[in-house]
Length: 298
Image (cartoon, rainbow, N blue to C red; front, side, top):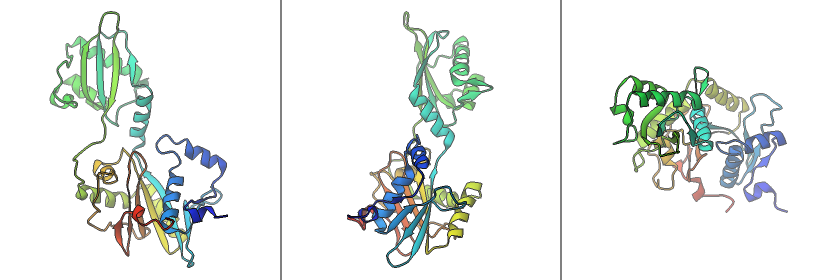
């Protein structure tokens, strides 16, 4: 019988509780398993999802090559947790009834939208704010652009922007209809062409950030030793457009510059954790490449 690693699957040493928790992740269900599959398919080596929480500072992945070399990998997602929470909450409840309003409102919000404000949930404070817009006669019936609050200054507009609202539009509620609020989350977007300069700027800043999270990643890989130390970044819809778009199927070029990782990272992977179609890797001996063009297990 062929072992899992020979078919391009990782050997999963995590506990059942870890696997269940990872599968329920609302951002990218079991992203570690996805990464393990990619690493196993590309390397053809035995890839272990090894961090079972029994030891401190253990890297997420160990790679055992047939020639005796060993590699380790640390996996994380480049994620704005609040943005992801906003997206999750509003996708489950994209509109709400507001009987004391006289209009139906469309509210265009950003990832910084305040789900809570001074002890009140958005379902409470937002209808009250919109009622003040109605009382002031600021209806936004004719909206030239979705971020119209930026071109309509005023105290109420400034207050709404501070709450993470980019734009408003409304119409009178119909007979017996009652007021309602509908949400649109300001989607990630940008130029159709890949812009590599902001991609490189973000990547180098991200890898060299002086944060507790990044210090922990570096410490685990440095302490493990090994011949290779892989940093695996899951790119999400909360990542900058230049980075997210570089992993979309429309992108067909490679980054033109070598990254500038700290010495603890010898190899680099960028994998789309959400709605992305492409994987990019950087090895010091071959530069940037697309791993799916060179699967060892095919």
